[in-house]
Length: 393
Image (tube, rainbow, N blue to C red; front, side, top):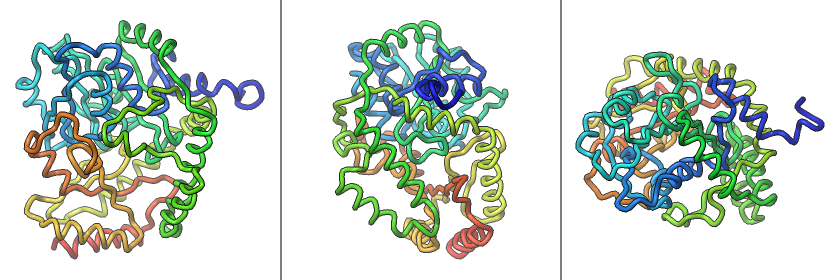
């Protein structure tokens, strides 16, 4: 029952729906106020170890590296492979040592990282954490869903994701010992968002939805400024981007937001089918354009469609492509615009030159929307191709 008495069971309904999709037990699914908080919680129950280290990709988000910091561990960066935008496996042997507690492997944009079993076999003492924030449905070469490959995985449900609760995330625990420890941790350590915060999250989500259409994009930032002045916008605090831990961290996913996630997740197969069709349209659009690399296959469930421009293409041309897309009403996202995204945020333990491939790729990558409710028209796609061809021919 969705309404009546059952409406108050939003968290349980959502957990069960997620579990059904992944064909796992519901007690393996944990809901959080943000995916980063799930990552932090896993590290926190294993952290605070003297000289402990966590390997992360040199092409990630600041909230990932901050979670490592908050758990009292050191971040060690592995460079990425331009062929898949994920950790370059060949570098791991030189980074793993007696201080390594865990490794956070990415499935960036939804591109499945394929070497988790290799890590597990060679380094069974490590906790392998999948960063699945960009996908719900990608599979590896053996047909196993991303999120079921490591010991733990975390998924994002934030504003920019196709399945979204505004702020939110969930983690899947595939390791029995970790599951038991996390269950106790959740019972004793979890805070809650206030009702006012939940209302701001819901309001912000609706504004993102309303202003995501091509014909409403022009009013997005004026509208957001008005609502911000009214204290009705919820976003990651600037202090958190600079490394400070928020007052309420970690928190559980509010019941009302979980119910909203349940309603959307109930349609996940159709959502993913539509996203696949959108990516197929992009594949056709970018055929035979020189100077670019694309990554999509039917095994991947993309959050956005990445396009990497070759190293010989100038930054000025890349900026020109972005600007022309913007004028055409098409948002070219900047994930990730630095090895620790967004540029200018706190780069915990990172020094220039640690990850040359990540530094280079962050300047040369564009990504296009895979929005199921604001799908680009055929005319839009022709315009995208025209812009790229004009700049790269």
